[in-house]
Image (tube, rainbow, N blue to C red; front, side, top):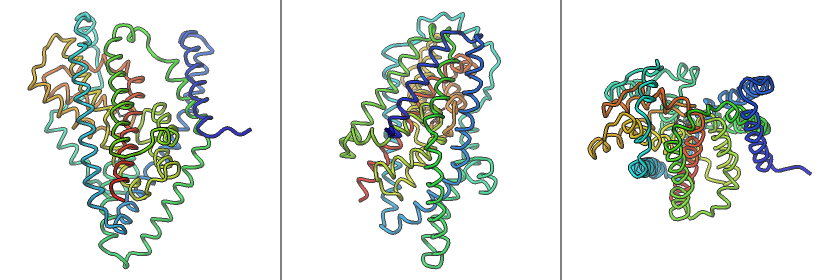
Length: 409
Ligand code: ASP
């Protein structure tokens, strides 16, 4: 009997988590743990490299083709507007939910200052960015020589170039038929390679999860319990209550069909902690499993994977208030409004790679005068939280695609 890919992935995930826990209990020094984590690390790395290999060609062709073909049903403007409206409003909803929960549960308010002091004395990788510097960097990195951008795996500038090329293809019309055909064919070929990568998805997911669970740091879990619970609880609430409600009401879509169609993408997002690396799988799930219009998916998904991150925005807001609690600072309403806007900006600026939110976190902290060094406390627990928020980030993109698709056809 041949198991469906969905069933294989689910089994792989359960097996991976179980083995991970077993190794975690054996302890990090046990030779079984060391060796298994080592080999799983290699397998996981190869798997993520395969996803990254296909990422830039996929983003480039899918956006170009997506834009150029949107002309065909004269829906471009509507898709644009609806996507942006969806990205902004769902991200704002996520941050409001996070701020509400953190004010309610006040994580960190009773933690000892000493621990905070120890942690902020540790050196961190954090570089200080002011808001202006951040915006300047963000804009400067938007337009880059496309060859350089693609060679360096820079997703946002690649998207920008693809947008220009797609629009140029529309303006040129019949004169550029050959190029449009070429791009369409290239896109089909890349999706074929994505399908091959899908075949080894269960192995990659299993290896990544074993490593993730086996190498958690237990001491941090204990002391940061409430914070972790608030972040995971609210992120899951947004991902499994708010977003599905939008799917049912605005998208008029069956939840069961949805989950059956996207589960591969959600589990991949959880185990890779990267929206960008998951994009090939997300695209395949939406187009082949859920039969969403290819041009809409080709536009909304890659852009969403880069700028629409509900989980990240929520996390940045909650973490900023948590750090304020630890430092004994009470942020007033105006300051919380600043956190609200900065968290949204920071999530837009964070690329879809593991722990990207940690880097942009610095600007949220600094916007209300909190020490950037505090990310030293957040870093050790980021692996698990990153997995959860990335899953919700990807979920937001998939639901947005369905809603935009429903309202443009
Ligand atoms: N890992 C997240 C993502 O790829 C970004 C983040 O660090 O929040 O969606």
